[in-house]
Length: 231
Image (cartoon, rainbow, N blue to C red; front, side, top):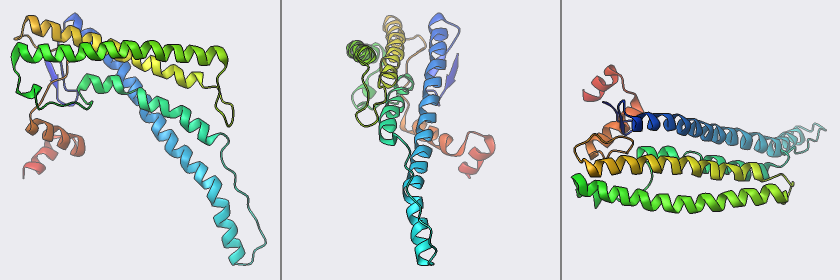
């Protein structure tokens, strides 16, 4: 049995755990892609700002020193449309990974007081409700993508095709549905056997453990750094 506080999950050699680890690789790849899109958009925005404002600033300096040079703004083509399209990627691609580690927003004041089979039943019902909602959203996001693809939907300003952006939504929802299925399986086996190890489900940690995890995220997990913190 292997535990990882950063991952907030346990793993072993069972079929459920292997499926969980396989899906984890996909979720991590999507999370990395979402992070890359965020970084790319930051650089993209910086270049656009430099292209729009940089020449104006230089022209003002030239005028101050009586240099007869005038520069014109060179904004990036389709900047607003492209940002709107790429925002979909980082908005949805990492949601399955957040579900895996229990990083989503939820109220734990009530369930934190539960123990044993009662806790697993309530967790199972919550995941079941989320599964139903996500199946509905998966269906309608898929139909939205198909309509955009068949009709050739595009942005208003630069008429950039929107279907590649809309494709990411059902893909991300499909991975999340797969995660919810594994979590339902994990909670169901815990309902049948409350003493079994919780596999493929996020663990609830105490405030001390959560604080320790935040320290690890901020300062690392080496022995020397832990010793410094203790001193």
